[in-house]
Image (cartoon, rainbow, N blue to C red; front, side, top):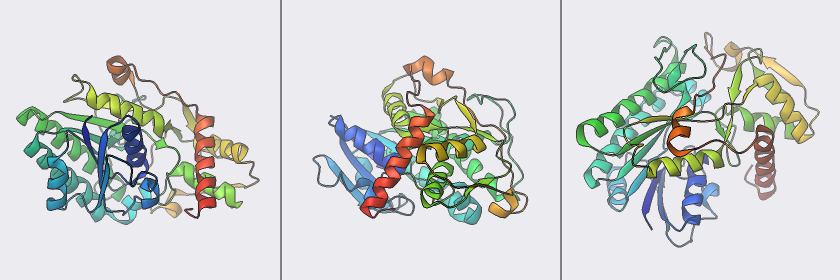
Length: 327
């Protein structure tokens, strides 16, 4: 039995990770300021043996130090998330991501805890070589476009984590997640799949940003959590970066059609220009799909849940939230 600390543990991915670790008999603590996480996500875990939580910002030095002092492993998931939040609150995005990661690494170094930092496919920026591989060059847009603040801040997180590994020997693993989706994710900050499902359930128009021909690949949270747990335990993962995601591409237009089929909705599909959805001059990627050969070679990981089943799981989860008054 080990002690795990999950920053951002009341969030969508963090709560699933906590649940999986507890099911394995581990001790789990979380820290979350509930800015994007929800108490409803961890409510079934409260009171279970080995589970503890603290409602605090990850930059709260006193709380973080106490939790880190008891941790063997820290999963650092706390971050500003979602394109809409990044566009609307760039200062919050930059400060939360960089300062939060710095605080976690300092605490981990103080107590020699192993660290896994979740990064994002956003760091590939406007790269045109697809699928994206971990050692590819990165091209970002200009600093005048807030959209790239998130990518830049997460790149700094990666640089810092790898620097702690190189300079101090701290075991740090970096995981770049590609569109992780599933039950408990909300569309509050622009997450496309729960937003589509919510619109379909209400009978509202399903709003596709741009022309809908841009492609994405979606990975179920259960598959992603399985990769996170195995990577943090593998001795050869420290000091390396890993893509975790599905290689099954779908256009956003096709995703909207699939959501209609799964939900049985008659909602129309409505196309909204990026400038209207976000801000004038907003830049988006035409394709985003990972090269997962590195993670597959190290731990044999492949996603197991199909896209149709992913959409169904999101739909059933949102119906459950609605019935329980959490929607």
